[in-house]
Image (cartoon, rainbow, N blue to C red; front, side, top):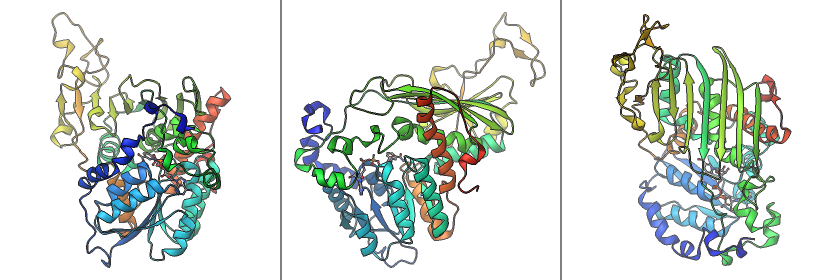
Length: 467
Ligand SMILES: NC(=O)c1ccc[n+]([C@@H]2O[C@H](COP(=O)([O-])OP(=O)(O)OC[C@H]3O[C@@H](n4cnc5c(N)ncnc54)[C@H](O)[C@@H]3O)[C@@H](O)[C@H]2O)c1
């Protein structure tokens, strides 16, 4: 139990807890959209939030920057987080009624248009299905569910109710990712034929989350909501009954982007992992996986690793590699770079069109080094540049940039896409059936680690009811 944790292993210290007011002030400064006058506006979307923890707050904060969103209710079984969200919203003119029980909220608040679900993964299906059945559109956080059956039920309910269901893989609405996929990889064939992908999210060892003793939820109430104890309630990500561990917590974001960028699902998976370090967790703290993707251009071999016992090795990114170029992309723009293979057509025309930006001195490499310009280097025949590729020039070191930046909170464009879908019929960037395919891809990692052998997928594994 967290109560017995040493002070240093309890990130929610008493000081943190007592300084809620100060932290709230900082959040408020970052959320300038006050909802005065929004009520009654013809395109106002009335929203409830279920799950007011870390991510619920981040989504609230992002939604507060979008015009004509009105929060009507907040739901959380933990009074501490519920009150925080209620107070935050009040500062911006939203009278969000607090509820402990989502069923009560859905019954009582009759003028809702949409529900945002940011509860632990094992509750996503129940909360989403109930909100859809109550006639609301739903934005549900990733991973869609901790089970394939749960995720499938969400697709089925969205279809039955004909309500919108957006899953929170927010990279799909990030303008830099959209530019990379649509303008560079698809339209310009910048990478040529993609042959390999690698990706990673590495994190240093962290302490478990704790809680202030006065904010402990009673054992009866924890049991009523499916939690074994406070330690598991706070650290649900690491336990099998609530979630899928680091591969679904972190890897899900990026493996979803593999499927999205390729427009394909994998045909096989092999993986290795284990509880190598932590003593109080159930899920694999390190996981390494290799997928094979059949694509119309040929096979793509895609590796991914999530390491939570070291931060070494460059943070988090997805790296798409082709025979004419490679693109390293990340939610963090400082990790995003593109590299040209020597055999590729010149990229200057793409620079002229504003699709990519000129090489800089990125990542410590000298700009546009050309080995064949050095004395004593012999030129050899090459496939696509009229016979002048140097044998040693296996890859270029200078890095081009993607000249598209996101000047908003990273979740805001994905929420905007959801609200635009409600208001204007804009297609969702992460509809339930696509997120289902990603959930199948991600959840298979834990299965493959346990099986200790190559597993194969059938195309129908990624479909619900054959569609
Ligand atoms: N898209 C992203 O970048 C991103 C980032 C972090 C987390 N997430 C996702 O967001 C979700 C929430 O993660 P978090 O980090 O905020 O976790 P958290 O533990 O900080 O918050 C979860 C909240 O849900 C509440 N809760 C639990 N059971 C509930 C129930 N039955 N009814 C109502 N409330 C309940 C908890 O009291 C808590 O306040 C997860 O699905 C996670 O995968 C997404």
